[in-house]
Amino acid sequence: MNLSPLIAALDVENAKEAQRLVDELSPYVDIFKVGHPLFMRYGYEVTDYITGKGKKVFLDVKLHDIPNTVYLAVKAAREKGIFMLTLHASGGRKMIEHARKAKGEGFPLLLSVTVLTSMDEKQLKEIGILKNPEEQVIHLAELAVSAGSDGIVCSPNEVKPLRERLKKDAIIVTPGIRPEENGKKDDQKRTATPKKAIEMGADFIVVGRPLYKSAYPAQKAKQILESIEM
Ligand code: C5P
Image (cartoon, rainbow, N blue to C red; front, side):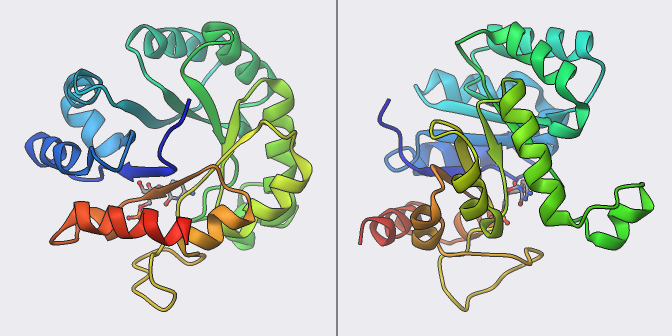
């Protein structure tokens, strides 16, 4: 499968706006990420639009529940033609194994989230995790992949250590991408340019605001892809 490494995050609240972005970005983007904001409002309306256009859906709903419930949720996503789906690695081995069983060798590809980038050491301690965030990310990523996760979503900082430790075909997806070295970071703390993220070993980069807040999203997407190839 030869897919564009650029995943567009559709973090907008309106289905029409999401559809316009899909149409505009389609020459450069094969996978569109739909998260809670759109999914809670429209359910599969937007994802069906994306698949109807021949594009793929990354459903970012970070599943975290008992194994049987996650099994049923992944089965539904499989039947709905979802291409990538996120789950929390902290749900544990049994939960991930059940997710894997629900989709077998097919789709959706299961991507595990380790430590949310909004969590720092202090907040981790508060919920009883004594490892520092980096150690915890590596610990959970290794657990997730060994339990059947196809890959990991991680910050640019973690791409290199995870690429070195995880098996070669583990998929690494990274958000926190900012096209300009000294550009606006918004609420992202650890960022990297698209080129840097790919060089460090990411298979896909997720880009939200730099695309959907741009006056010319397609032009921006083209520039991002060109910057990776340079
Ligand atoms: O707008 P921006 O490019 O920062 O969007 C990044 C996207 O990646 C958002 O959809 C955000 O929810 C998601 N994400 C993230 N950090 C994570 C996991 C997901 O920014 N650790």
